[in-house]
Amino acid sequence: MKFRILAIVVLFGTSMSYAQMFEIGAFAGGSNFIGDVGAEWYIKPNSLAIGGVAKWNISKRYSYRGSLIYSKLHASDTDSGSSARQTRGYNFSNDVLEGSLGMEFNFLEFDLDNFSRSVTPYLYGGVSLFLHDLLYYDNDIAIDYGNKTTFAIPMAIGVKGRLNTRFVLAAEIGARYTFTDNLDGSNPKEFPELRFGNIFSDDWYVFSGVTLTYTFGQKPCYSCYE
Image (tube, rainbow, N blue to C red; front, top):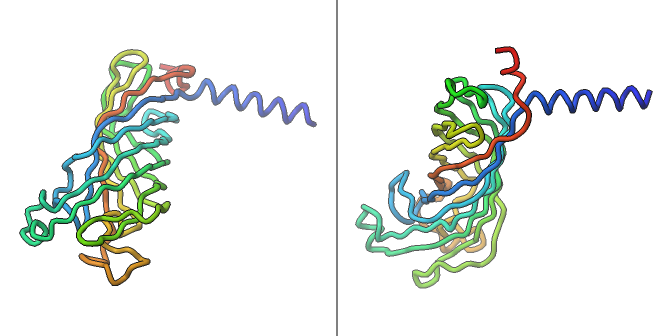
């Protein structure tokens, strides 16, 4: 019985290795913050964002995806179009380290083994867990008083294409809806008297950039019969 179970596990693992193709690579781009401090632009990168990404392509349409990205979110009221914010003059920086898991959906069939299907737009969604600083303002200066881990929902759209038989280049814009309203120091739970802005609206941040991934693994089974 033990031999049969071991044989089934080995056969299943072997079939999976032949049925998938994997990607691993790097992300580079920029970040911007959307909240109660700074500009009202939804997409306006002003800080470097870097990280890594890995994908498990289970079909021509779907991929499991994981990423780890670091950025120092920054916003300044001097960049705002609001005269009230400009007069206030707040600014902050917040170190963010995000881990994300989810699924990527290709609008077109994306065959890693066929150049005739080598470009497609795509969507990505999942769940993120990110480490960030806790802030409050004292005499118009943002003070860091610790850090916290918080969940976010990533939503990204992009386009990707094969450069050759091994490399895939993608460009995307990904917004994160966070479950905190204090990335900018506007709603410190420990200091309720220092709250300002819209305390009923959580913060967002955006990563915009490119990924370059290297593909490896056996030829996917969805190409074996073409």
